[in-house]
Length: 566
Image (cartoon, rainbow, N blue to C red):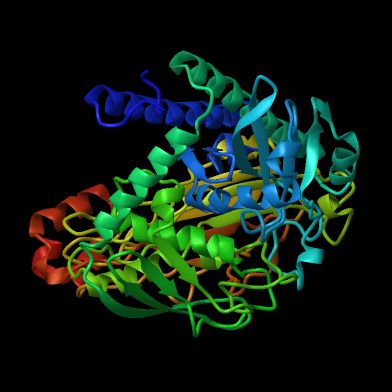
């Protein structure tokens, strides 16, 4: 007997368990790749804004795909349990698929749909497959932070059946598609989630057949227990104690203060956000599920990046927050742009860890990606500046800033940390709209000076080929007033900025109009520097000058004339 039910202790048994564990990861990675191959939305198929995972019948995540974002994977780790409250396992059958986009019971905002399917063997569920991705539009105000409640932000789908024994729920789809500006894309993305779960279930059954398994429960217990033990072993290397930090974010109508207190013991790490600003009246709040997701990710990046991410390893971290705060808003608070706050939380975790593990923590990063949702008046059914011959469009691109400098290394330029999403090629957005990208390039002098330089941000310039206005939502534009901070003597990265080519600057997170013939220019923040800039070698400064990462004026100002090098 060689399966997970075999007597423990034999070396061959340990090898078989590890092989099956690796096969589970391969199963869910193929599941994720199915989304990439079949998704309609560019933010999914190009940027990889998705996740996939396999769960036991109690809803515990056993394995996650390598492809995906922490905000999706770690929220989904908890989300599957909520499905089981509404649809117990014993009520599930072959062909069933369940869905929700509830921000508090899913992944934090209405634009992400979580889809759960049972993997059945001989007509009975043996595991659960879950996946999620971002869809382009769910009605309401669109991707904007201007709503004052979730009711204005779009259509909320509670836990429902999307497919019942193989038959799609056409009534549900009809209601949803009647309320979106991009019905073809939304339908295609939802069906891609169904397809990817079907693929995962098929591959899981094949794996179980190959290894002679009638159940994966013993394997799940093994994976979860080993991961929990490995994470606790890693946590014990962090000095016990309490550590505090505070961050100021731009916010919408007023600054948002993130206050975190980390308590480290031999068994767990707890981060308590007591004292954080109250929930905003605008849609930048981070539901607790999203707050937990990125807090855990930040801790894991430093404490034990090599330990697999699953229910066991995540259980060693705990997040506490006050209901009604910006990191734990209660229904019906607006939450569309939740990653303005949520994606800054790894830096809050780093701020605490820097006091427990000095010299081992990176400087602050740009954090929240700048989502660039573009549209025009006709996309909203008319409006000022939208002539009758204007092309109707509602598209999305993304901008990334720089990562903070790391111990012994410069920060990465134009890289989405912590989300990990990729860029959407400008050609894709241009093919879907009359927009044209005139510039998308590194922004010199944007990386924070230090012995190790922060990663560069980028400048993006966008116009239209038509003589009509278009709009952009600045919902996620942050760090325009509070740039990423340096660490250990390093200086801040350059703050972000947004303006019209004609001169006027954007200073808030509203929806802005770019007049006919004008262009939008956005400058993404650079990462903070690490260590005293005077300790940066002349050789590295010269290399930065040659690469165009710093200007001669910047090198002289930040590193000294002799290092700037005439």
